[in-house]
Structures are given as structure tokens and as C-alpha cells.
Amino acid sequence: MSEHKKDFDKWNDKKKKLDKKERSILTSPRQIWWASIGLNIGDEEDGKNQHFERPVLVIKTFNRRVFLGVPITSQRKENKFYFEIEYNNKKYYLILSQIRLFSNKRLLRKITKINAQTFLKIKDNLGKIINL
Image 1 (cartoon, one colour):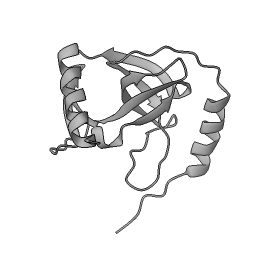
Image 2 (cartoon, one colour):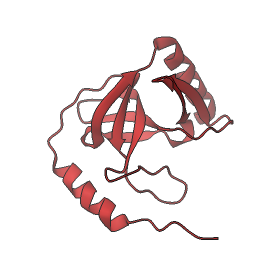
Image 3 (cartoon, rainbow, N blue to C red):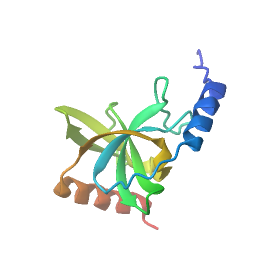
């Protein structure tokens, strides 16, 4: 089995540039942004292309610097850790198990904002899988 080699050095260079950015974007829940989420370890979701980017749904905004978000994939998975949404006439899947804190410095461009009813269902599903 061939293993995909990750270029952590390239991501590290990009990460250093992102960290130097002055970024004061006030996100709001329900927004979906392209974000540089990087190259990650093991089964953590990676970003793609030269920006190491992936769509991320904003779950909760803490301030102009950080927010709680969930990465999104186009790969269909049917289990309790994925939640199907649709935007731009395509289906995507929130990876609920990979919810985490993001710096606003990672944000590249806003994609859309999902409707309130769908967002309530997402929050309900997050609560069920986290179940602290």
C-alpha cells in the first residue's frame, strides 16, 4: 500500500505567513468560510491545494480572533459523526467529530451562510456526539 507523503515543511512556511497576518474579522454562527486548516496528524482532516484550505462552518464566535468551527468535506459518509448540508446546489458533509477552535487568521474568503433551521439540527447533532 502506497502512503501519501505530506509536505509539512511547505505547510509550516504557509503557517508562519498566516500567523503574521493582522486579522480582525468578526465571524458569525452559520457562516461557511474557506480556511487554511493545514496539514494535520493522522486522521485529522487536511486542507487542500497551495493554501491548505477547506470549507469550515462557524459554530460559535468568541471574539474577533477565534471561533469554534467544523471542517466540511465533499466525501459522503453516513454515520453519526457526519452531517449532510447543501449549498451552491451540491451536497457536503460536516465532520462533526473534528470540531475545534480556529484563528480568524486562517480565514480566506466567505462562501455562504446556512439557514437557521439547518443550523439548529447541526447543533443538536453536535450535542449528541459530544455528550459531555
